[in-house]
Length: 121
Image (cartoon, rainbow, N blue to C red; front, side):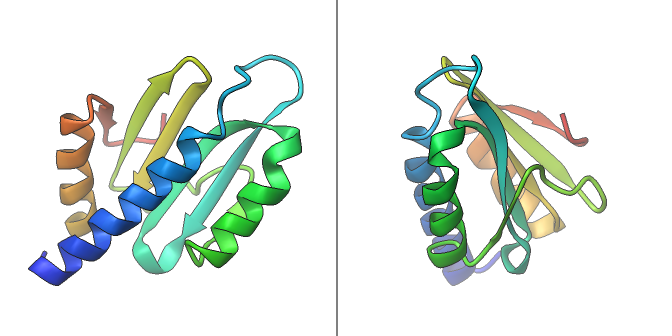
């Protein structure tokens, strides 16, 4: 990945982590749903557990900031690798759909103490 591509990827990851870190605060009790943002142009999909009341704001963030498609789960077809981050609010999964993006994702996953897998968790 060239320097410009990595810079764009780093900005993308920072945005996703910032947006998702404020979303999972209520835990995995009732009233939570699985939300995903599939940014297919970036070969990236993020899936996390959020309070159902936050779905409208997560959807807006997904479509406006990440230029993605909101949904209820990331696609399993074509996944190259996924990183799972576990926190008190539940798991956040970031899946990658191209080898070059997955290489950068695996490196970030390791440095951020996530768990890397070559399959969807």
